[in-house]
Length: 556
Image (cartoon, rainbow, N blue to C red; front, side, top):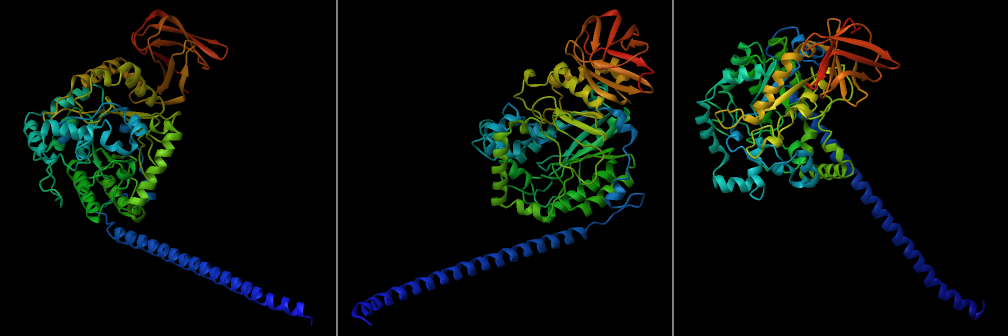
């Protein structure tokens, strides 16, 4: 071996040793990474197993409380509940009145506007700056909110609980019979009273003790008195219960939809809500049981409650806002999870703003008698009975800031909503928000109720007790909407708007036979014009709102 070769070998030895060390270090780092990943994987698996185990334990504990208290045809299973048929009275009723009335009716304040607009412009504070005056207690907790500033200016440091004294003083002047007559004259066939809203205040002398708010109920039986007054005039009576939210059990300020939807409640609230609703069923036998937001137990317990309700009130009906809660709902109540929900909601609203205005259809539930889209219509006739819920103003509770201009137009909004809903197998549940403890129905809302009643004096035959026709809607060649209903073989054609003249043509409609005007019995001639149908009137249409044509023997 030459000297050069020996020198090259001597130089390469340290280099090879270095490469070996580097390979060894890389292998060790890879081993550490793999070990770390393995550890993280094992921990993730353990957390997942623990979470599912906790969920199973929560469900088992809740299910053990699923005891029925009645005997009858209905059992506490979804299959049994789904055998319940929607009674004719509800399908025939068409118009109901909901009443939001409580301690929040005393201050009666919220900023003006619409909830949809607030979601778009101030999502992070939407629940303390929206126009729903019934949420006064939550909004006043934020001193920088419009309600917080209003409260400081008018009531100083007075707590929300102090409104109870003013409310009770006003209640002494309240007359349930006057309300019932007003609702009856408006054409309502049923009334739904908010028995307990999210502030937790009960409008009946409940025997169920609230562990977080002593004596938090009315001494006068407001629910019972209105039930008696309503039924005396032949209307049905229902109760609304805020099952998903009760701020006496959860004192945190609610700012966002995530806060509102995923407030963490303990088992004591589930027991409390269950006991109160059972008490309402036993005392008042409500014809409608109208829960809101969601329900704080699992499905098995809820099914037992629903079966007890049907066994007690066989012709009763249940709405669809009974989404049950459970362990995973509580997980969503953790701040990181609800914050993630809010981030997703904000992005969804940003890229699809119509989400806030095409509101609000409820998620599907295992059992309900009817669905409750809020401030919106289904585009087509629904096989399942449904009920459009909306206020007359932008607030459900009384809001003294709202003027007549802030209330929905009778002809442009309320009557069209009602007429279209009926044509598609729906009802309208129209909300009123009386003021103060006296329960004064404000002029802006009274005028709309009177208008509904006056229209129904003539249109009632084409509205009550009817069913959808094979076609729900059409349009005239002049662009006016047209709806259809039927009853006992007679078809009713309602033209929305104020048409004039002696002739109108409805597009894409084929009818024949004799017809008359519902208002005065005057004859109407029907003739086909290609794919359309022309109506020629004996007497000129005089611009009266929504004339109705009666077509006998055309409903098949």
